[in-house]
Length: 336
Image (cartoon, rainbow, N blue to C red; front, side, top):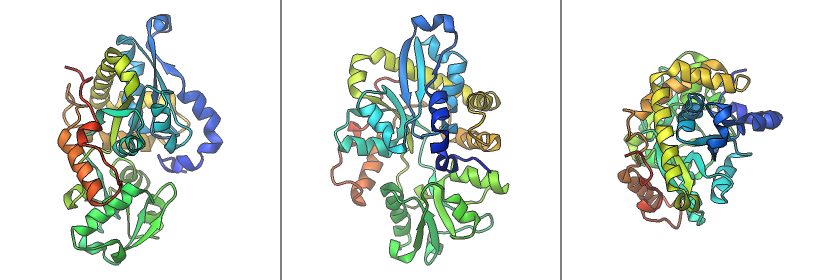
C-alpha cells in the first residue's frame, strides 16, 4: 500500500494512540538545556504526520528552536476540524493551518491571526492523467473528482467561469479523503488537488507527473494555501517569543530547502512507520519550489494576496461576513 497524506487519514483511527504519542513529543537540541527553554505548543493541520512539517522537524533536530529558547511541542489534532479549536482556545499558541481556516475561524470571532505564509502562492488546480492535458473549455461534460468543501467548490466555480461554464456543465464525484484513486481507477476524467499532495501521489504511484491546470491562471486568487497562525491573546503577551519562533522557522525552512536529503531523513527518523519514503521525498521536492528565494522575507504575508482572497470569497459568496484583508494577518513578528 502506498501511504499518502490523505490515504493515511483513512487508517488514522487504528494508529491514533501511536500517532499521539509520537507527535506530542517535545523537540529540543539537548536534554540538559531543557530547563532553560520555554515550551511552545505547535498544533498541526493534519491528524497524521505530514511532509509539510519537514522544516520544523529538521529545525528542531538541528537545535534552531532551542537556540531561540524554545522547546517546540509539535502536536497533531484529533481531526482536521480541531486545529483552529486548539489555537482559538489557547491549548496551542501557534498553528500550521490553511489561510481559509483562518478566515473561517475569524468569522466565528476566534482570537487567531496569520503570522507567516507557507509558500508564495496557490498551487491548487485540476489534475489529469499524463498525456491528457485539459483546458478549462475541455472540462465541459467531464467528470471531476473533488473534495466537498466550500473552498474547493468556490475555486472550481472560478475556473469554470473563465470559459463561461458553470457547475451544471460538469459532473462531480466527491471523495471523502483522497481524489487520486478516483483518477487512477479511471472513475473520473480529472481531479482537484494541489501539486505537492495529489500531484505528488500521482508521481509516486505511476512514475509520471500527470497534467496540471493551474487555478490561478483562470480566475482563482494566488493566495498561499497554508499559513502559520497564532493565538492573538498569546501574541499580545509574548511578542518576543513569537518573533523567536518565526526566526527559528525561517532558518528551518532555509535549511530544509538547501539540504533536502537531510531534511527528509529527519522526518523519516521521526515517523518511519507513517509514510512511504518515496512519497515523502517526492512531496518535499515538490514543495521546495513553492518557497521561492529563502531569506528573511520567506514568511512575509502579502497584503495583495489576502485582498484577492477576500475579494474572491465575497464574489462567490463563500462567506456572508468578511473582514478587511489586513485583519487576517500581521507581519509584526517577522525577522527584521
